[in-house]
Length: 133
Length: 189
Image 1 (cartoon, chains in turn cyan, yellow):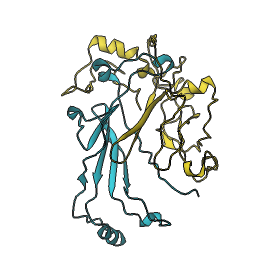
Image 2: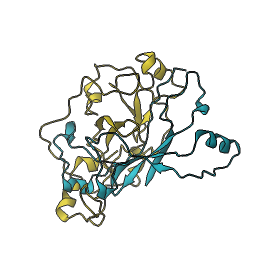
Image 3: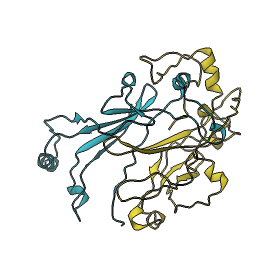
Image 4: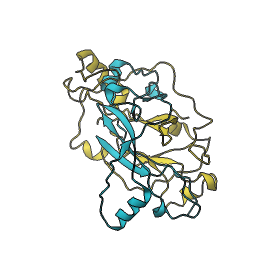
């Protein structure tokens, strides 16, 4: 289940560049698989110039498919690469942490807990370093 | 966001554990444990910040428990959004010019809202809070679940309002003097 897709450019825009002139280079997904959260990343392989011309022609004849990208980030905390749940080098499985405050104090995250504590990655909230409007 | 689990009706619905090769049914014991797990009775949100390449920057959990609720996850609502709406002057006047639009907000099912503050700024990425970050610890007295849950009239109208929102929720300036009623929401305080 995919809840959210977010295309973005991994390169900073030139100073004073218009947002629509920034060509997306990657696309991120969030969702859920087998009750656990999923975050995945793909890379557009077509040249930026090619995509611009196709946009102008109002067609989507991307000839080279979007390819998964191997994330370079270190897996830590509750981001995992558990293969049995779909995690790997380009897909992260997000699991629930133990503990919490108030009534959530002392909660564990054992194998049994994993069977019923669901994680659903619902949103991507990108942060853009930007100039205030 | 966690809290909607798979023990809602019976033990015939299964999910995989993080190590299971295939989903498995809950046992009777696991089902009983699930029914009394606070994560089942209300929502619990995990906010995890990743760089674009997957590097984990920080994470935190936020949660709320309404002991008087008789609807499963009655505070379930839309997911978290970054408070950066152009109509929100508040978003654009907090912290410093370089740190604008870094508050995260979300709506509860009853129409109220929560903001995740204490997120300090940085030029390239939202950084983890540097203070007020003590996580909950110690023993937890598990709450015995109600004997039944209802999601129909007359109980539905007053505790199950929103499944989506266009509320103009606005993040406010970081402050270290929040009331306990606010800080109790989050591990981030």
